[in-house]
Length: 611
Image 1: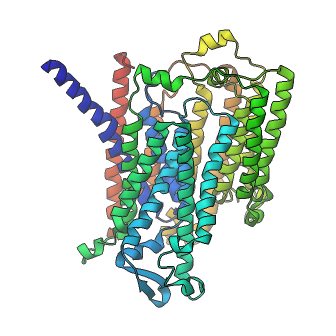
Image 2 (image 1 turned 60 degrees about the vertical axis):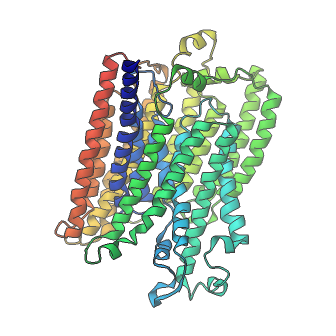
Image 3 (image 1 turned 30 degrees about the horizontal axis):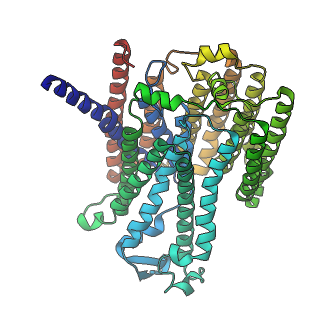
Protein backbone atom coordinates (compact mmCIF):
# COMPACT_ATOMS: atom_id res chain seq x y z
CA UNK A 1 0.00 0.00 0.00
CA UNK A 2 2.79 2.40 0.95
CA UNK A 3 4.71 1.54 -2.21
CA UNK A 4 1.63 2.12 -4.39
CA UNK A 5 0.97 5.40 -2.65
CA UNK A 6 4.57 6.51 -3.16
CA UNK A 7 4.44 5.55 -6.86
CA UNK A 8 1.21 7.47 -7.33
CA UNK A 9 2.70 10.50 -5.57
CA UNK A 10 5.79 10.32 -7.79
CA UNK A 11 3.67 10.16 -10.93
CA UNK A 12 1.63 13.12 -9.69
CA UNK A 13 4.76 15.21 -9.07
CA UNK A 14 6.13 14.27 -12.49
CA UNK A 15 2.86 15.30 -14.16
CA UNK A 16 2.89 18.62 -12.31
CA UNK A 17 6.40 19.30 -13.55
CA UNK A 18 5.73 18.29 -17.17
CA UNK A 19 2.18 19.58 -17.55
CA UNK A 20 2.20 22.66 -15.33
CA UNK A 21 5.56 23.97 -14.17
CA UNK A 22 7.66 23.56 -17.33
CA UNK A 23 4.97 24.65 -19.82
CA UNK A 24 4.18 27.68 -17.66
CA UNK A 25 7.88 28.54 -17.37
CA UNK A 26 8.32 28.21 -21.13
CA UNK A 27 5.28 30.36 -21.97
CA UNK A 28 6.32 32.95 -19.38
CA UNK A 29 9.90 33.11 -20.69
CA UNK A 30 8.71 33.51 -24.27
CA UNK A 31 6.21 36.15 -23.16
CA UNK A 32 8.84 38.07 -21.27
CA UNK A 33 10.84 38.50 -24.47
CA UNK A 34 8.19 38.74 -27.17
CA UNK A 35 5.86 41.15 -25.38
CA UNK A 36 8.77 43.45 -24.53
CA UNK A 37 9.67 43.39 -28.23
CA UNK A 38 6.00 44.09 -29.00
CA UNK A 39 6.44 47.70 -27.91
CA UNK A 40 9.85 48.18 -29.56
CA UNK A 41 10.88 49.87 -32.76
CA UNK A 42 9.30 48.38 -35.88
CA UNK A 43 6.55 46.62 -33.94
CA UNK A 44 3.60 47.75 -31.82
CA UNK A 45 -0.13 47.05 -32.21
CA UNK A 46 -0.96 44.08 -34.47
CA UNK A 47 2.63 43.77 -35.67
CA UNK A 48 3.99 43.20 -32.19
CA UNK A 49 1.21 40.84 -31.15
CA UNK A 50 1.80 38.67 -34.22
CA UNK A 51 5.44 38.44 -33.10
CA UNK A 52 4.32 37.11 -29.72
CA UNK A 53 1.44 34.99 -31.04
CA UNK A 54 3.45 32.85 -33.44
CA UNK A 55 6.00 32.15 -30.71
CA UNK A 56 3.40 31.02 -28.19
CA UNK A 57 1.52 29.08 -30.86
CA UNK A 58 4.62 27.15 -31.87
CA UNK A 59 5.45 26.43 -28.22
CA UNK A 60 1.95 25.11 -27.40
CA UNK A 61 1.93 22.93 -30.52
CA UNK A 62 5.42 21.59 -29.83
CA UNK A 63 4.76 20.66 -26.20
CA UNK A 64 1.36 19.12 -26.88
CA UNK A 65 2.27 16.76 -29.70
CA UNK A 66 3.60 13.24 -29.19
CA UNK A 67 6.06 11.72 -31.63
CA UNK A 68 3.68 8.83 -32.31
CA UNK A 69 0.74 8.92 -34.69
CA UNK A 70 -1.85 8.70 -31.91
CA UNK A 71 -2.13 11.90 -29.89
CA UNK A 72 -2.94 11.69 -26.18
CA UNK A 73 -3.87 15.36 -25.68
CA UNK A 74 -6.86 17.25 -26.99
CA UNK A 75 -5.28 20.47 -28.27
CA UNK A 76 -2.44 19.29 -30.53
CA UNK A 77 -3.39 20.40 -34.05
CA UNK A 78 -0.84 22.08 -36.28
CA UNK A 79 -3.46 24.78 -36.93
CA UNK A 80 -2.83 26.03 -33.37
CA UNK A 81 0.22 27.96 -34.61
CA UNK A 82 -1.91 29.95 -37.04
CA UNK A 83 -4.72 30.26 -34.48
CA UNK A 84 -2.58 31.99 -31.85
CA UNK A 85 -0.71 34.04 -34.46
CA UNK A 86 -3.99 35.48 -35.73
CA UNK A 87 -5.92 35.54 -32.44
CA UNK A 88 -3.28 37.33 -30.38
CA UNK A 89 -2.32 39.44 -33.41
CA UNK A 90 -5.85 40.79 -33.83
CA UNK A 91 -5.95 41.59 -30.11
CA UNK A 92 -3.22 44.16 -30.67
CA UNK A 93 -5.42 46.48 -32.70
CA UNK A 94 -5.98 48.89 -29.77
CA UNK A 95 -4.13 50.87 -27.14
CA UNK A 96 -3.83 51.22 -23.36
CA UNK A 97 -1.83 54.40 -22.86
CA UNK A 98 -4.65 56.45 -21.34
CA UNK A 99 -5.18 54.10 -18.39
CA UNK A 100 -1.64 54.30 -17.02
CA UNK A 101 -2.19 57.70 -15.44
CA UNK A 102 -5.12 56.29 -13.44
CA UNK A 103 -2.60 54.59 -11.16
CA UNK A 104 -1.19 58.06 -10.43
CA UNK A 105 -4.69 59.17 -9.44
CA UNK A 106 -5.18 61.43 -12.47
CA UNK A 107 -7.25 61.37 -15.66
CA UNK A 108 -5.46 63.37 -18.35
CA UNK A 109 -7.61 65.69 -20.41
CA UNK A 110 -4.87 67.54 -22.30
CA UNK A 111 -1.40 66.16 -21.56
CA UNK A 112 0.38 68.77 -23.71
CA UNK A 113 -0.97 71.54 -21.50
CA UNK A 114 -0.66 69.49 -18.31
CA UNK A 115 -4.43 69.46 -17.74
CA UNK A 116 -5.99 66.63 -15.75
CA UNK A 117 -8.60 65.83 -13.11
CA UNK A 118 -8.26 63.55 -10.06
CA UNK A 119 -9.59 60.00 -10.34
CA UNK A 120 -9.60 56.90 -8.14
CA UNK A 121 -6.82 54.38 -8.79
CA UNK A 122 -9.54 51.70 -8.88
CA UNK A 123 -10.28 52.70 -12.47
CA UNK A 124 -6.79 51.59 -13.46
CA UNK A 125 -7.30 48.10 -12.01
CA UNK A 126 -10.73 47.77 -13.61
CA UNK A 127 -9.68 48.80 -17.11
CA UNK A 128 -6.50 46.75 -17.20
CA UNK A 129 -8.53 43.73 -16.10
CA UNK A 130 -11.15 44.35 -18.80
CA UNK A 131 -8.44 44.88 -21.41
CA UNK A 132 -6.30 41.95 -20.28
CA UNK A 133 -9.07 39.36 -20.58
CA UNK A 134 -9.58 39.56 -24.36
CA UNK A 135 -6.00 40.57 -25.10
CA UNK A 136 -4.95 37.04 -24.19
CA UNK A 137 -8.41 35.45 -24.38
CA UNK A 138 -9.10 36.01 -28.08
CA UNK A 139 -6.15 33.78 -28.88
CA UNK A 140 -7.62 31.13 -26.55
CA UNK A 141 -10.98 31.42 -28.33
CA UNK A 142 -9.45 30.65 -31.72
CA UNK A 143 -7.19 27.97 -30.19
CA UNK A 144 -10.38 26.30 -28.93
CA UNK A 145 -11.62 26.14 -32.53
CA UNK A 146 -8.78 23.72 -33.28
CA UNK A 147 -10.30 21.01 -31.06
CA UNK A 148 -14.08 21.12 -31.07
CA UNK A 149 -14.71 17.36 -31.05
CA UNK A 150 -17.44 16.75 -33.63
CA UNK A 151 -16.78 18.75 -36.82
CA UNK A 152 -19.17 21.69 -36.97
CA UNK A 153 -21.56 22.27 -39.83
CA UNK A 154 -21.46 25.50 -41.81
CA UNK A 155 -24.49 26.92 -39.97
CA UNK A 156 -22.80 26.21 -36.63
CA UNK A 157 -19.68 28.06 -37.75
CA UNK A 158 -21.90 30.94 -38.88
CA UNK A 159 -23.51 31.02 -35.44
CA UNK A 160 -20.12 30.84 -33.71
CA UNK A 161 -18.78 33.80 -35.68
CA UNK A 162 -22.02 35.77 -35.32
CA UNK A 163 -21.98 35.26 -31.54
CA UNK A 164 -18.62 37.04 -31.36
CA UNK A 165 -19.56 39.85 -33.70
CA UNK A 166 -23.03 40.17 -32.17
CA UNK A 167 -21.75 40.59 -28.63
CA UNK A 168 -19.03 42.98 -29.86
CA UNK A 169 -21.71 45.08 -31.56
CA UNK A 170 -23.98 44.97 -28.51
CA UNK A 171 -21.29 46.04 -26.04
CA UNK A 172 -18.99 48.14 -28.21
CA UNK A 173 -21.63 50.03 -30.18
CA UNK A 174 -25.18 49.88 -28.86
CA UNK A 175 -24.54 49.94 -25.11
CA UNK A 176 -21.39 52.06 -25.38
CA UNK A 177 -23.19 54.76 -27.38
CA UNK A 178 -26.36 54.78 -25.28
CA UNK A 179 -24.80 54.44 -21.82
CA UNK A 180 -21.49 56.36 -21.91
CA UNK A 181 -21.69 56.93 -18.17
CA UNK A 182 -20.98 53.22 -17.67
CA UNK A 183 -17.98 53.00 -19.98
CA UNK A 184 -16.36 56.45 -19.69
CA UNK A 185 -14.76 57.35 -16.32
CA UNK A 186 -16.28 60.35 -14.54
CA UNK A 187 -18.64 60.96 -17.45
CA UNK A 188 -21.27 62.52 -15.18
CA UNK A 189 -18.97 65.29 -13.94
CA UNK A 190 -16.96 65.66 -17.18
CA UNK A 191 -19.78 65.48 -19.72
CA UNK A 192 -19.02 68.92 -21.14
CA UNK A 193 -15.36 68.05 -21.59
CA UNK A 194 -16.18 64.71 -23.23
CA UNK A 195 -18.23 66.69 -25.76
CA UNK A 196 -15.40 69.15 -26.44
CA UNK A 197 -12.73 66.77 -27.70
CA UNK A 198 -10.74 69.42 -29.53
CA UNK A 199 -9.88 71.09 -26.23
CA UNK A 200 -9.53 67.71 -24.49
CA UNK A 201 -7.59 65.45 -26.90
CA UNK A 202 -6.75 62.86 -24.25
CA UNK A 203 -10.45 62.25 -23.72
CA UNK A 204 -10.76 61.50 -27.44
CA UNK A 205 -8.04 58.86 -27.06
CA UNK A 206 -9.68 57.55 -23.89
CA UNK A 207 -13.00 57.10 -25.71
CA UNK A 208 -11.22 55.18 -28.48
CA UNK A 209 -9.26 52.95 -26.10
CA UNK A 210 -12.28 52.17 -23.95
CA UNK A 211 -14.58 51.47 -26.87
CA UNK A 212 -12.10 49.11 -28.54
CA UNK A 213 -11.43 47.37 -25.22
CA UNK A 214 -15.16 46.80 -24.73
CA UNK A 215 -15.59 45.70 -28.33
CA UNK A 216 -12.81 43.12 -27.97
CA UNK A 217 -14.34 42.01 -24.69
CA UNK A 218 -17.56 41.50 -26.64
CA UNK A 219 -15.79 39.22 -29.12
CA UNK A 220 -14.33 37.26 -26.23
CA UNK A 221 -17.65 36.88 -24.39
CA UNK A 222 -19.57 36.07 -27.58
CA UNK A 223 -17.23 33.24 -28.54
CA UNK A 224 -17.36 32.01 -24.94
CA UNK A 225 -21.18 32.02 -24.95
CA UNK A 226 -21.19 29.86 -28.08
CA UNK A 227 -19.01 27.23 -26.37
CA UNK A 228 -21.30 27.32 -23.32
CA UNK A 229 -24.28 26.73 -25.60
CA UNK A 230 -22.53 23.72 -27.15
CA UNK A 231 -21.68 22.47 -23.65
CA UNK A 232 -18.06 22.09 -24.71
CA UNK A 233 -16.78 22.54 -21.20
CA UNK A 234 -13.10 22.04 -22.07
CA UNK A 235 -13.26 24.96 -24.49
CA UNK A 236 -15.10 26.99 -21.86
CA UNK A 237 -12.43 26.19 -19.27
CA UNK A 238 -9.64 27.09 -21.70
CA UNK A 239 -11.15 30.46 -22.64
CA UNK A 240 -12.11 31.43 -19.09
CA UNK A 241 -8.76 30.40 -17.59
CA UNK A 242 -6.67 32.41 -20.03
CA UNK A 243 -8.92 35.46 -19.86
CA UNK A 244 -9.38 35.68 -16.09
CA UNK A 245 -5.77 34.80 -15.25
CA UNK A 246 -4.36 37.45 -17.56
CA UNK A 247 -6.92 40.05 -16.54
CA UNK A 248 -5.84 39.64 -12.93
CA UNK A 249 -2.15 39.59 -13.90
CA UNK A 250 -2.34 42.82 -15.86
CA UNK A 251 -4.32 44.58 -13.15
CA UNK A 252 -1.76 43.59 -10.53
CA UNK A 253 1.14 44.79 -12.71
CA UNK A 254 -0.37 48.32 -12.77
CA UNK A 255 1.70 49.28 -15.83
CA UNK A 256 4.67 49.31 -13.40
CA UNK A 257 3.63 52.80 -12.32
CA UNK A 258 4.73 51.88 -8.80
CA UNK A 259 8.35 51.17 -9.83
CA UNK A 260 9.80 54.73 -10.05
CA UNK A 261 8.57 55.41 -6.52
CA UNK A 262 10.14 52.21 -5.23
CA UNK A 263 13.48 52.82 -6.99
CA UNK A 264 13.59 56.61 -7.47
CA UNK A 265 17.23 56.79 -8.55
CA UNK A 266 17.22 53.84 -10.94
CA UNK A 267 17.63 54.66 -14.63
CA UNK A 268 15.54 51.85 -16.05
CA UNK A 269 13.18 51.61 -19.01
CA UNK A 270 10.13 51.06 -16.80
CA UNK A 271 7.73 50.95 -19.71
CA UNK A 272 9.55 48.01 -21.26
CA UNK A 273 9.58 46.33 -17.86
CA UNK A 274 5.79 46.63 -17.87
CA UNK A 275 5.59 45.23 -21.40
CA UNK A 276 7.75 42.28 -20.41
CA UNK A 277 5.74 41.54 -17.26
CA UNK A 278 2.55 41.82 -19.31
CA UNK A 279 3.89 39.08 -21.59
CA UNK A 280 4.90 36.96 -18.61
CA UNK A 281 1.32 37.31 -17.33
CA UNK A 282 -0.09 36.04 -20.64
CA UNK A 283 2.43 33.20 -20.62
CA UNK A 284 1.42 32.15 -17.11
CA UNK A 285 -2.25 32.24 -18.14
CA UNK A 286 -1.60 29.89 -21.07
CA UNK A 287 0.57 27.65 -18.90
CA UNK A 288 -2.22 27.21 -16.34
CA UNK A 289 -4.70 26.56 -19.14
CA UNK A 290 -2.36 23.97 -20.68
CA UNK A 291 -2.40 22.07 -17.39
CA UNK A 292 -6.15 22.31 -16.89
CA UNK A 293 -7.33 21.36 -20.38
CA UNK A 294 -4.47 19.67 -22.22
CA UNK A 295 -3.18 16.91 -19.99
CA UNK A 296 -3.03 13.40 -21.37
CA UNK A 297 -6.48 11.93 -21.85
CA UNK A 298 -7.53 8.50 -20.67
CA UNK A 299 -8.96 6.01 -23.16
CA UNK A 300 -12.46 6.88 -21.96
CA UNK A 301 -11.88 10.62 -22.42
CA UNK A 302 -10.57 10.10 -25.94
CA UNK A 303 -13.59 7.97 -26.79
CA UNK A 304 -15.93 10.73 -25.62
CA UNK A 305 -13.96 13.37 -27.57
CA UNK A 306 -14.11 11.38 -30.81
CA UNK A 307 -17.76 10.36 -30.52
CA UNK A 308 -20.01 11.72 -33.25
CA UNK A 309 -23.73 11.55 -33.77
CA UNK A 310 -24.95 9.15 -36.41
CA UNK A 311 -28.04 11.18 -37.25
CA UNK A 312 -28.42 12.14 -40.88
CA UNK A 313 -29.31 15.62 -42.05
CA UNK A 314 -32.48 15.52 -44.20
CA UNK A 315 -32.87 18.35 -46.68
CA UNK A 316 -35.69 20.04 -44.75
CA UNK A 317 -33.54 20.09 -41.59
CA UNK A 318 -30.67 21.54 -43.59
CA UNK A 319 -33.00 24.11 -45.16
CA UNK A 320 -34.04 25.37 -41.74
CA UNK A 321 -30.40 25.75 -40.73
CA UNK A 322 -29.65 27.53 -44.02
CA UNK A 323 -32.40 30.09 -43.34
CA UNK A 324 -30.63 30.81 -40.05
CA UNK A 325 -27.35 31.13 -41.97
CA UNK A 326 -28.92 33.70 -44.30
CA UNK A 327 -30.15 35.77 -41.37
CA UNK A 328 -26.76 35.59 -39.71
CA UNK A 329 -25.08 36.36 -43.04
CA UNK A 330 -27.16 39.54 -43.41
CA UNK A 331 -26.19 40.60 -39.89
CA UNK A 332 -22.52 39.84 -40.61
CA UNK A 333 -22.70 41.78 -43.85
CA UNK A 334 -23.50 44.93 -41.90
CA UNK A 335 -20.72 44.22 -39.42
CA UNK A 336 -18.03 43.54 -42.01
CA UNK A 337 -18.64 46.31 -44.54
CA UNK A 338 -15.81 48.87 -44.34
CA UNK A 339 -16.40 51.81 -46.73
CA UNK A 340 -13.42 53.56 -45.20
CA UNK A 341 -11.11 50.93 -46.71
CA UNK A 342 -12.05 51.74 -50.28
CA UNK A 343 -8.57 53.17 -50.88
CA UNK A 344 -7.11 49.84 -49.82
CA UNK A 345 -9.08 48.15 -52.57
CA UNK A 346 -12.72 47.37 -53.20
CA UNK A 347 -12.31 43.84 -51.88
CA UNK A 348 -11.55 44.94 -48.33
CA UNK A 349 -14.26 47.59 -48.37
CA UNK A 350 -16.89 45.00 -49.35
CA UNK A 351 -16.02 41.95 -47.28
CA UNK A 352 -19.57 41.97 -45.87
CA UNK A 353 -21.06 41.50 -49.34
CA UNK A 354 -18.53 38.78 -50.09
CA UNK A 355 -19.37 36.96 -46.85
CA UNK A 356 -23.09 37.02 -47.67
CA UNK A 357 -22.31 35.92 -51.21
CA UNK A 358 -20.43 32.88 -49.90
CA UNK A 359 -23.50 31.90 -47.86
CA UNK A 360 -25.83 32.23 -50.87
CA UNK A 361 -23.54 30.25 -53.21
CA UNK A 362 -23.14 27.57 -50.54
CA UNK A 363 -26.94 27.23 -50.30
CA UNK A 364 -27.36 26.91 -54.06
CA UNK A 365 -24.53 24.37 -54.32
CA UNK A 366 -25.87 22.27 -51.44
CA UNK A 367 -29.36 22.23 -52.98
CA UNK A 368 -27.89 21.03 -56.29
CA UNK A 369 -25.87 18.41 -54.43
CA UNK A 370 -29.03 17.15 -52.70
CA UNK A 371 -31.01 16.99 -55.95
CA UNK A 372 -28.25 15.00 -57.67
CA UNK A 373 -27.40 12.56 -54.87
CA UNK A 374 -30.78 12.55 -53.15
CA UNK A 375 -29.62 12.28 -49.53
CA UNK A 376 -27.85 14.12 -46.80
CA UNK A 377 -24.75 12.99 -44.92
CA UNK A 378 -24.68 11.83 -41.31
CA UNK A 379 -22.32 13.38 -38.80
CA UNK A 380 -20.38 10.12 -38.61
CA UNK A 381 -19.91 9.91 -42.38
CA UNK A 382 -18.89 13.55 -42.51
CA UNK A 383 -16.36 13.13 -39.68
CA UNK A 384 -14.72 10.22 -41.52
CA UNK A 385 -14.61 12.10 -44.81
CA UNK A 386 -12.99 15.09 -43.14
CA UNK A 387 -10.58 12.78 -41.34
CA UNK A 388 -9.54 11.40 -44.70
CA UNK A 389 -9.06 14.92 -46.01
CA UNK A 390 -12.16 14.84 -48.19
CA UNK A 391 -13.79 18.22 -47.48
CA UNK A 392 -17.46 18.85 -48.12
CA UNK A 393 -19.40 22.01 -48.98
CA UNK A 394 -19.68 22.91 -45.29
CA UNK A 395 -15.90 22.80 -45.00
CA UNK A 396 -15.42 24.92 -48.12
CA UNK A 397 -17.97 27.56 -47.05
CA UNK A 398 -16.37 27.79 -43.61
CA UNK A 399 -12.84 27.97 -45.05
CA UNK A 400 -13.73 30.81 -47.42
CA UNK A 401 -15.74 32.70 -44.76
CA UNK A 402 -12.93 32.60 -42.20
CA UNK A 403 -10.42 33.57 -44.88
CA UNK A 404 -12.46 36.65 -45.79
CA UNK A 405 -12.69 37.74 -42.14
CA UNK A 406 -8.98 37.07 -41.62
CA UNK A 407 -8.17 39.25 -44.61
CA UNK A 408 -10.26 42.10 -43.20
CA UNK A 409 -8.61 42.05 -39.78
CA UNK A 410 -5.13 41.74 -41.24
CA UNK A 411 -5.66 44.38 -43.93
CA UNK A 412 -3.22 46.71 -42.18
CA UNK A 413 -0.50 44.11 -42.64
CA UNK A 414 -1.70 43.02 -46.06
CA UNK A 415 -1.41 46.56 -47.36
CA UNK A 416 2.25 46.42 -46.53
CA UNK A 417 2.60 43.34 -48.72
CA UNK A 418 3.37 45.52 -51.71
CA UNK A 419 6.11 47.79 -52.92
CA UNK A 420 8.23 45.18 -54.66
CA UNK A 421 6.38 45.35 -57.98
CA UNK A 422 6.49 49.07 -58.66
CA UNK A 423 8.67 51.22 -56.44
CA UNK A 424 6.90 53.96 -54.57
CA UNK A 425 3.43 53.01 -55.73
CA UNK A 426 0.64 51.09 -54.07
CA UNK A 427 -1.79 49.03 -56.10
CA UNK A 428 -4.79 47.65 -54.15
CA UNK A 429 -4.72 44.32 -55.94
CA UNK A 430 -1.27 43.57 -54.53
CA UNK A 431 -2.87 42.91 -51.16
CA UNK A 432 -5.22 40.31 -52.70
CA UNK A 433 -2.45 37.93 -53.74
CA UNK A 434 -2.20 35.86 -50.59
CA UNK A 435 -5.91 35.65 -49.76
CA UNK A 436 -6.66 35.04 -53.42
CA UNK A 437 -4.25 32.13 -53.67
CA UNK A 438 -5.61 30.57 -50.48
CA UNK A 439 -9.16 30.88 -51.85
CA UNK A 440 -8.17 29.16 -55.09
CA UNK A 441 -6.47 26.43 -53.07
CA UNK A 442 -9.61 25.83 -51.00
CA UNK A 443 -11.83 25.49 -54.07
CA UNK A 444 -9.29 23.31 -55.88
CA UNK A 445 -8.79 21.09 -52.84
CA UNK A 446 -12.54 20.58 -52.57
CA UNK A 447 -12.97 19.79 -56.28
CA UNK A 448 -10.12 17.28 -56.29
CA UNK A 449 -11.91 15.37 -53.54
CA UNK A 450 -15.43 15.75 -54.93
CA UNK A 451 -15.75 12.24 -56.34
CA UNK A 452 -14.31 10.41 -53.35
CA UNK A 453 -17.03 8.62 -51.33
CA UNK A 454 -16.93 7.49 -47.70
CA UNK A 455 -18.23 3.93 -48.06
CA UNK A 456 -18.32 1.24 -45.36
CA UNK A 457 -14.84 0.01 -46.26
CA UNK A 458 -13.45 3.53 -45.81
CA UNK A 459 -15.22 3.82 -42.48
CA UNK A 460 -13.61 0.62 -41.23
CA UNK A 461 -10.16 1.53 -42.49
CA UNK A 462 -10.07 5.03 -41.02
CA UNK A 463 -12.05 4.83 -37.80
CA UNK A 464 -8.88 4.56 -35.73
CA UNK A 465 -6.99 7.50 -37.20
CA UNK A 466 -8.98 10.69 -37.55
CA UNK A 467 -6.44 13.05 -39.08
CA UNK A 468 -5.43 14.39 -42.46
CA UNK A 469 -1.66 14.86 -42.22
CA UNK A 470 -1.28 17.14 -45.21
CA UNK A 471 -3.93 19.64 -44.18
CA UNK A 472 -2.61 19.71 -40.62
CA UNK A 473 0.95 20.20 -41.81
CA UNK A 474 -0.25 22.91 -44.14
CA UNK A 475 -1.90 24.69 -41.19
CA UNK A 476 1.32 24.57 -39.16
CA UNK A 477 3.44 25.83 -42.04
CA UNK A 478 0.99 28.62 -42.89
CA UNK A 479 1.13 29.80 -39.28
CA UNK A 480 4.92 29.79 -39.30
CA UNK A 481 5.08 31.52 -42.68
CA UNK A 482 2.70 34.31 -41.65
CA UNK A 483 4.12 34.81 -38.16
CA UNK A 484 7.83 34.56 -38.92
CA UNK A 485 7.54 36.38 -42.25
CA UNK A 486 5.85 39.39 -40.67
CA UNK A 487 8.24 39.26 -37.71
CA UNK A 488 11.26 39.43 -40.01
CA UNK A 489 9.62 42.18 -42.05
CA UNK A 490 8.88 44.35 -39.02
CA UNK A 491 12.10 43.47 -37.23
CA UNK A 492 14.23 44.60 -40.16
CA UNK A 493 12.43 47.94 -40.17
CA UNK A 494 12.98 48.32 -36.45
CA UNK A 495 16.67 47.49 -36.80
CA UNK A 496 17.07 50.25 -39.38
CA UNK A 497 15.25 52.71 -37.13
CA UNK A 498 17.47 52.41 -34.07
CA UNK A 499 20.76 52.75 -35.99
CA UNK A 500 20.33 56.04 -37.89
CA UNK A 501 24.06 56.29 -38.61
CA UNK A 502 23.95 52.97 -40.51
CA UNK A 503 20.57 53.69 -42.11
CA UNK A 504 20.29 57.48 -42.42
CA UNK A 505 17.35 57.25 -44.82
CA UNK A 506 15.07 55.97 -42.02
CA UNK A 507 12.99 52.86 -41.35
CA UNK A 508 10.37 53.55 -44.01
CA UNK A 509 12.94 53.63 -46.79
CA UNK A 510 14.88 50.61 -45.57
CA UNK A 511 11.74 48.73 -44.66
CA UNK A 512 10.74 49.01 -48.32
CA UNK A 513 14.19 47.84 -49.42
CA UNK A 514 14.18 44.81 -47.11
CA UNK A 515 10.62 43.95 -48.12
CA UNK A 516 11.69 43.68 -51.77
CA UNK A 517 13.48 40.50 -50.68
CA UNK A 518 11.22 39.25 -47.87
CA UNK A 519 7.95 39.75 -49.76
CA UNK A 520 8.77 37.65 -52.85
CA UNK A 521 10.26 34.94 -50.64
CA UNK A 522 7.04 34.71 -48.60
CA UNK A 523 5.00 34.62 -51.80
CA UNK A 524 7.19 31.86 -53.26
CA UNK A 525 6.94 29.83 -50.04
CA UNK A 526 3.15 30.16 -50.03
CA UNK A 527 2.89 29.02 -53.65
CA UNK A 528 5.12 26.03 -52.89
CA UNK A 529 3.06 25.06 -49.84
CA UNK A 530 -0.26 25.25 -51.69
CA UNK A 531 1.00 23.33 -54.71
CA UNK A 532 2.41 20.67 -52.40
CA UNK A 533 -0.95 20.49 -50.62
CA UNK A 534 -2.78 19.85 -53.90
CA UNK A 535 -0.25 17.33 -55.21
CA UNK A 536 -0.41 15.38 -51.94
CA UNK A 537 -4.18 14.82 -52.10
CA UNK A 538 -3.89 11.15 -53.12
CA UNK A 539 -1.28 10.14 -50.54
CA UNK A 540 -2.68 11.53 -47.36
CA UNK A 541 -2.94 8.74 -44.80
CA UNK A 542 -0.26 8.51 -42.16
CA UNK A 543 -0.18 6.72 -38.83
CA UNK A 544 3.31 7.90 -37.98
CA UNK A 545 4.76 11.16 -36.69
CA UNK A 546 3.34 13.99 -38.81
CA UNK A 547 6.15 16.35 -37.76
CA UNK A 548 9.43 14.39 -37.54
CA UNK A 549 11.37 17.68 -37.63
CA UNK A 550 9.33 19.41 -34.93
CA UNK A 551 12.42 20.17 -32.84
CA UNK A 552 14.06 21.96 -35.75
CA UNK A 553 10.92 23.96 -36.47
CA UNK A 554 10.62 25.01 -32.83
CA UNK A 555 14.33 25.81 -32.74
CA UNK A 556 13.95 27.93 -35.86
CA UNK A 557 11.21 29.96 -34.18
CA UNK A 558 13.26 30.50 -31.02
CA UNK A 559 16.38 31.53 -32.93
CA UNK A 560 14.67 33.88 -35.39
CA UNK A 561 12.62 35.62 -32.71
CA UNK A 562 15.59 36.03 -30.38
CA UNK A 563 17.84 37.36 -33.15
CA UNK A 564 15.16 39.92 -34.02
CA UNK A 565 14.86 40.87 -30.34
CA UNK A 566 18.63 41.40 -30.14
CA UNK A 567 18.76 43.45 -33.34
CA UNK A 568 16.01 45.91 -32.42
CA UNK A 569 17.23 46.42 -28.84
CA UNK A 570 19.92 49.00 -28.78
CA UNK A 571 22.15 50.66 -29.45
CA UNK A 572 24.46 48.46 -27.40
CA UNK A 573 26.30 51.51 -26.09
CA UNK A 574 23.16 52.37 -24.10
CA UNK A 575 23.20 50.38 -20.85
CA UNK A 576 19.42 50.74 -20.40
CA UNK A 577 19.08 48.82 -23.64
CA UNK A 578 21.99 46.46 -23.08
CA UNK A 579 20.39 44.94 -19.98
CA UNK A 580 17.46 43.83 -22.13
CA UNK A 581 19.83 42.18 -24.62
CA UNK A 582 21.23 40.15 -21.72
CA UNK A 583 17.72 39.49 -20.41
CA UNK A 584 16.58 38.15 -23.81
CA UNK A 585 19.61 35.88 -23.98
CA UNK A 586 18.81 34.42 -20.56
CA UNK A 587 15.20 33.83 -21.60
CA UNK A 588 16.39 32.18 -24.81
CA UNK A 589 18.59 29.76 -22.84
CA UNK A 590 15.70 28.91 -20.49
CA UNK A 591 13.31 28.36 -23.41
CA UNK A 592 15.78 26.29 -25.40
CA UNK A 593 16.55 24.05 -22.44
CA UNK A 594 12.86 23.32 -21.83
CA UNK A 595 12.25 22.62 -25.53
CA UNK A 596 15.15 20.15 -25.71
CA UNK A 597 13.96 18.47 -22.48
CA UNK A 598 10.48 17.92 -23.89
CA UNK A 599 11.91 16.54 -27.10
CA UNK A 600 14.08 14.03 -25.24
CA UNK A 601 11.20 12.96 -23.00
CA UNK A 602 8.97 12.36 -26.02
CA UNK A 603 11.65 10.28 -27.70
CA UNK A 604 12.08 8.31 -24.51
CA UNK A 605 8.33 7.70 -24.17
CA UNK A 606 8.13 6.56 -27.80
CA UNK A 607 11.02 4.12 -27.38
CA UNK A 608 9.37 2.68 -24.25
CA UNK A 609 6.08 2.23 -26.11
CA UNK A 610 4.03 4.58 -23.91
CA UNK A 611 1.06 6.35 -25.43
